[in-house]
Image (cartoon, rainbow, N blue to C red; front, top):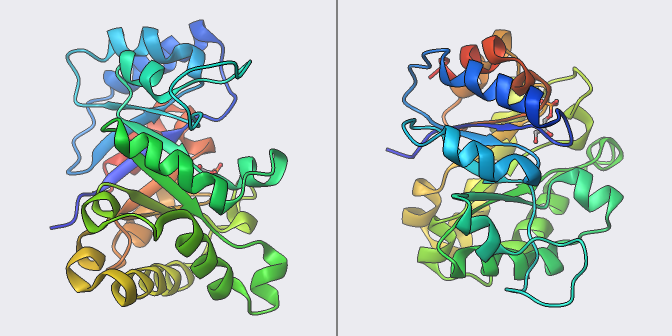
Length: 249
Ligand code: 13P
């Protein structure tokens, strides 16, 4: 059985007091799910959240990292620092970082390796823009993002990665990929992995969907055979909707 995940990417939202309030609401919302729940707040909340999560099954994730252990990189945060505050997962290659901060798949491959080398798990995001989909280039784009970002890894390393398919046109727009559209791409991702690493790796890697997941569409998406959970943005900022999505498993 592939591991299921429901991960809340808070992006750059909520100050520490409001963030703590939301986290406590989430902890108290009696989530009863077979999925691993992950909360991914801004960096500055991680240390406090680690203390609040001590007796909970919820794991902590970060939204980015630097590819070096330490050094003169003003404004950056390293993986050893994240590890020291209890982070287990690191989102890499979110389309907002690719778009606004010009991160590309080749440079992301170094971050992926760094996260794995320190025993944490990357959540590697891929996805196409609306233009790419309309021109029928979405499969090519996703294949390239996977190849450049991940395919230098060995089998065990790849199995420690989680992949998130996030079509850029569905992020924060209220437009969700239909279950058929999402399943088609998830199946393509799995086949692409199988063609390089074989069926065992492809069958065991978790692939999450992200893009306007809400309580009323989560179940249908999560029921698709190749969708192993969700990376949730806006709906993760409300404890009731996040818990409802988590309880869709
Ligand atoms: P929304 O759920 O707000 O569309 O965001 C998805 C996302 O980008 C999660 O990383």
